[in-house]
Image 1 (cartoon, helix red, strand yellow):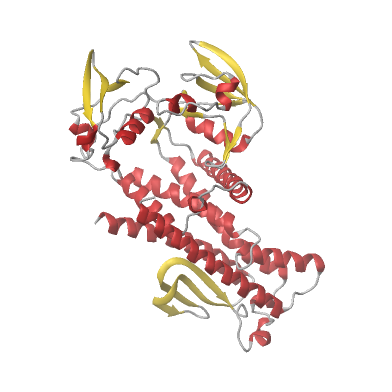
Image 2 (cartoon, one colour):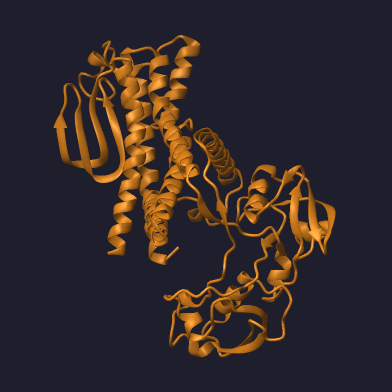
Length: 462
C-alpha cells in the first residue's frame, strides 16, 4: 500500500510540473495564433485523448514529460511547404517564437512562487538545527582520523562555539551557515561566535570540498543526543532506552558527544566482536547501557542500527497575503541561484563519482513520493507542505534546466531566435531540423543514461 501511494504521489507531482510547463507553451502559442496540433502529458501510446477544435489532447502511458506539437514544428515531406505558414511555429517572428519557448520555464517559475507563497500563509512547525558547531576534525578523531585541520580550526573556532554572525549576516541555525557558504564561496569570512558567554570574532578562509561541491569552513552542527522513542525503531526498544534519555558518554569518552557521533559509532561497530557502554542520564540518575555489537545483527539490520533523537522545533507563524507572496518570490530566486551555483560546480569542479551528482525522473519521483508520504504521517498540512515544497524545488530546477542554451530544450530555441533577431537573418529550416534532431538524440541518450543511474541507485539503496 505504501509503495502504491508513493507512486501515485510521484505521478501527481510530475503531472503538475509537466502540465503547467506545457500549458505555458500552449497559451502563448494560442496568443500568437500558432496552431497547436497536439497537447500531450506523458510520452508513448495514449491512455485517453480527444480532438478539440484544432488540437488533439492526449494523456500518455509514461507520466514523465510531455509536449506541445506546433504546426510546422516537425520533419516531414511537406515540412518546407507548411513550416512558414502564418499559423505555423516558424511562420511567426523570432520574437514570438522566443516567447513561446520562454513561457514553459516561466510557468514553472510562477507555479513554484504560488506553491511557496501558499506554504507561507499557514503556521507550521519547523525543525531548527542549532547553530552550535562541532569541528569536523573533533568528530573524525573519534573514529581514528587525526591528520586533518579544517579552515575553522585554523581560524580559531572550537567545538561548542555558537556561530551568531558571518560577515554581516545574522546566523540563527545550521541551515543559515550552509546557505551562507553556498553564496560566499572561497572568500574569507569573518565569523562571530558566542563562547562561554562572550562574543569573539575570527577570520576563516574556506576551502573547496569536491564531495559537497561547495566551499566549506569544516563544521557540523552540535546537537545533544536526547532520545526520541518511535514505536517502529527496534534499537531503542532493544536497548530499553526511554524518551528524553540523554547520552552523555561512550565508554570513557564524555567530550563532544552529539547525535551524529552516537549514530556513526553504532554504524561503524555494527556486528563487530566488540562491546561498548552508553553513558545515559535519565532524569537525575546516570545509568550504563551495555551494547554487544556482535549480537545486534540477530535482532536488527545495519539500516536499523541507529537511534532517533529530539530535534528542536519552532512554530513559524503564517504571513498575510503580501508577505507570503514576497516570501514566494524570495525563496524561488534563492533556489534558482543555488541551482546555478550547483551547475557551475558540477561542470567545473565535479565529484569523482559523477553518478551522485545527477538525478533523473525515477529518483525525483522517489523523492516526491517518499517525502510527501512521510509528511502525511504527521498530519495533512505537513504532507501538503512537503508536497508543495519538493514540487516547487523541482519545478524551479526544471525551469532552470530548460533555459540552458542546449539544443532540443527551450534554451536552445531561445538562443537560435536571439540569433535571428540580432542578425535579421532566417536560419535555414533544414539547418534547424538537423539541430533539433541532433539535440533530441543527445537528450534521449542522456535521459537513458540518467535513468540507468537512477535504477542502479535504487537497487543499491542509494
